[in-house]
Image 1 (tube, rainbow, N blue to C red):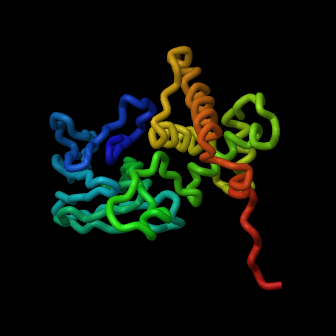
Image 2: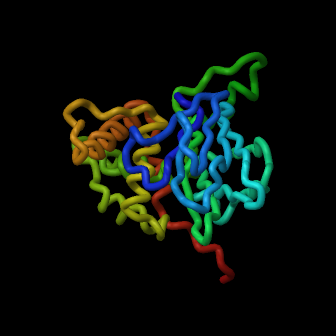
Image 3: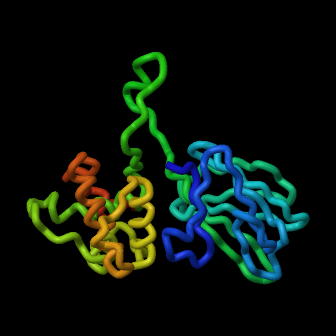
Amino acid sequence: MYSVIVVPPACARPDGRIEIASGESLAFGRQETPGGLTITHEGVPRIAGEISAQRDFWLLTNRSTGQTYVVENPEGAGEHIKVAPGRVDAPVAFEFSRVVLPAAGDLLTFDVWAPRQNFAGAEARELPGSTTAPAFTLDRTRRYFAVLAALCEPRLRGEPHAPTPAVDQLVQRLRPAWPTVSRSSVYWNIDYLALKLRVRPGPEAAEPGRRANGRKDSLVSLALRFDLVREDDLIVLNPPAYEGCG
């Protein structure tokens, strides 16, 4: 799997994403460069910066002479880092990131995914030497896992041949625990899950209108086959408990 995936502004196609292997770099800016990310806005420097992939995190270089860049964690309730003008190789460890570039009164954004997040298990704590690479790395605190749980819920509830939920049904099911959920955010997370779990829909889903359904079906099949989601995990779909004073 590629170490870092950059999602350009307004990118709606899987083949429009830019994949970077560990050790590789991607330049971005107004000037078109071979293999780079071109952002056509007069407020963006010709060479605005660089992204460098480093296994499960990435580095951001700010080539601007006077403008700070912000990297947001879309799932972090305001968590962000600031990268000052001229800063070289600032480390970013968010699994999901949104790079915000101030540009002549506008705020331009593009997303960066770092899907190779790894988590130490019992083996790493108990045995010396190298560890076994996990087959699947899923963080159950992330929204993508809630989307996966909602996809699998009908079959986990005892309906083995239930159809995969439609996106509108997923939005409705996720809303109690995720009030701001939308169709676009559900599609975004399905795309991310497909990439993270290396799922590809079959040739029968090659048409654009059927591709999302093919991804959903493939995700559910994989998740249930390998117990990536169990019935106990459906708790992530519950609204958070109220912790106010009695």
